[in-house]
Length: 226
Image 1 (cartoon, rainbow, N blue to C red):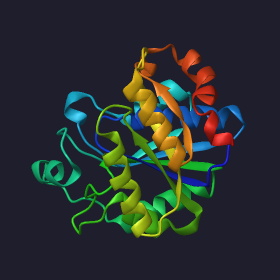
Image 2: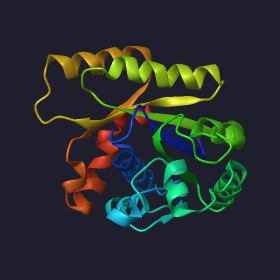
Image 3: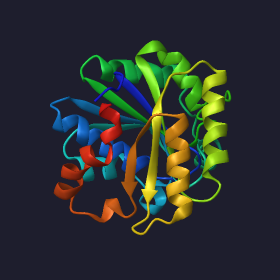
Image 4: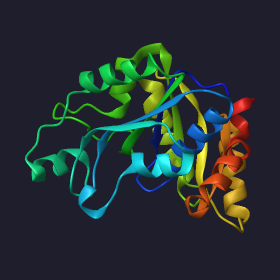
């Protein structure tokens, strides 16, 4: 799989399938014999049972998975931290931990919160800024919806990465419907014509038995090998 040592998984919005995509990437890499760590800088929603690291480990199997900070409310990190009355770690602290994980694993998958420019600290730092901290060993995978509006949202995210000279490794459609229509096929073709399309993750993939999920992940992400 042609992925850099550090992969930052971002999305065009919240709920587009970043966590399931991260789990599929981890599964496919581990199937190739790579050691994988997952790092979530800011995990929100602990009060309602949200834990992306736990979900990724459930789907992908045993791996190193940790969050930089865990927040209670299902909100963006800054307002969630304000309600919890805690200070968010600075981006430099996240970068240091990611580099530590990279020194002992073949790949570190860093899952963002919401979209690319959601603030992760109190100084306005975003996942894009974290990518700058991590330098040339890092590249971005953008997870998008296949539905109406995705072309604009994906183009905006890709443009934001390009304007910051950040490496884009490809796009994943994070929730491919069981019965795609002209719209979904058209969006898939358009996105694939302009960017590397790493693959598509079927909707409700997280409902599959974990062993089935792991076996299917490399097939879903077949574009990551080309």
